[in-house]
Length: 63
Image (cartoon, rainbow, N blue to C red):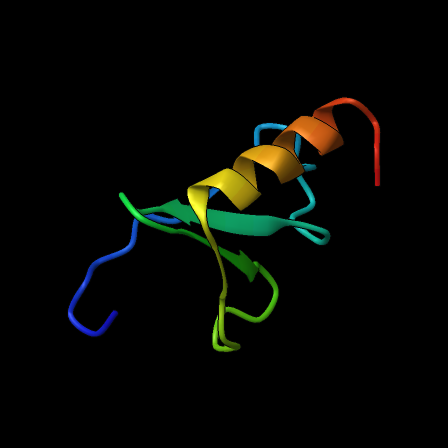
């Protein structure tokens, strides 16, 4: 990942307070997720398939 510029964004569902947010960066072969309160910690890396399953479950109220 060294040298790759990641464009991080927050969900439109994140509150305006910014206290309980995750940030996401989308790459062709991976999705990176990090805690917006501590961006120095390592990001979680998911496959696109794993991210799609997570997003579908979250959208359906699972979890």
